[in-house]
Length: 283
Image (tube, rainbow, N blue to C red):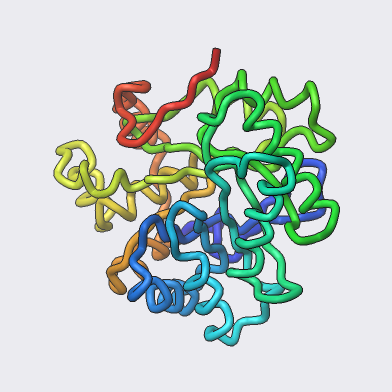
């Protein structure tokens, strides 16, 4: 039995009193007609951290699941993201408020609000970050961060940010795309690294190395990949709308991948070529 990790683990965010659950549940493009049920299944399985985004078009459904779950809001950690600015600081701030309202209802809040991408350019990133800082000051979000940002983008923040470092950087991470430069940079600065697509959308389910390890540990390939992310000190965000798999993806706290087998998985790294969504630009 592993004693090192538990589904109830919380990790401290940098320069903050906020703590983030070590395992999250992703709802990337989960259709509105199944998203509520998927979230309820995840919460029943022990997840306390749900990751959505404006781009996923299911923030309201995540909010509905929170209210239907009966779990006290203070025990849940909800993340959402803004993809592009609104055209002015005011319009961008209004976009943030719309998400808070969809998820939290009147007087509600978000636990973590991220800038979803670095693709809006210097001025767009600045506009969104300053709107997020305002949202943080007003208590409508508890923490703020970024997603798909490389070293150069996080360094750029220093020139205007009141809040630095960002609390979180959420990036694509799995054995084939380990993003070691930005991972090491974030860890040096205490930035929590979240791993999206930790199970590579099942594209690698028949990879012989992975299948061999799954057989060795008597686990699914997905469970090996989520466990790998945990042992890399990432916060994995596995996504599924299959109820059995939602439960299984959280059943990763009863085994340890050995140091030797972690090294085997590390050796699968293909750098940015291994990304299925996006590898960050660091310089």
